[in-house]
Length: 222
Length: 66
Image (cartoon, rainbow over all chains, first blue to last red; front, side, top):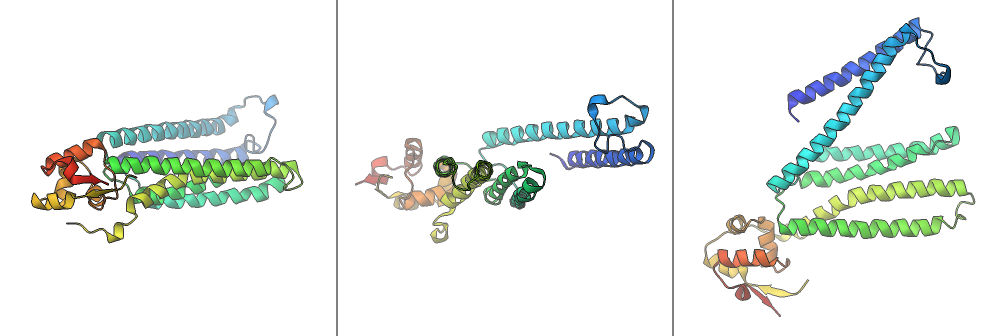
């Protein structure tokens, strides 16, 4: 994506956030916090004063949808480019820091006892983004036959490892006696599956980097 | 991987080619040529033929399987 396009997207995002904040302020000040405070939507009836809130939320939804579509288009474009030029896609290794988002998964240990919500455990999946560190190091690499073989080998070994972990964990957990409670067992299952999927995202990149660079220190060019 | 001896380095030097030049000729990375010379990588038939044409040596001379 060009810099100008990025600026437009960021500008639209800031506009949407500002619109939501303004409409929330409007609703709290002039509209008895309607659509801000929890309310029964079953008996909702339209009021002209709701308009700013409805418009800003609709605008934000459209923005998020457009952003997602743009993301898919960009991914498709970079894949087509990679196939055309035989080079790996350009990725900044710093994107690997997105893996820290996986720490959000620990929020589940707070949200489950307080609200009975187990969704945050799924965020452990984001640990997989640490793989960007290695993908970034290999970005812009010419994909010759050895590279493609290594990619396939890394993917295959990842499948073997993650399926083995999943199978072993499920066999142990499905006994249902590990924590003395079926509920805790299911939570543990979600955690294990999320972490295994994260490993499935991270490991191919790491293994590919290792296969590509193993023994590189003793190699000398001529 | 099948064990073999690779004589590519000898024939490449006879043709006064660097690893980089040979890699560019046969469409692979320099690292792949390095691995080939150390017999750490078993090439595809197409790559073996391309290399044998580039260094003008028969395949069976370049890659000797025990």
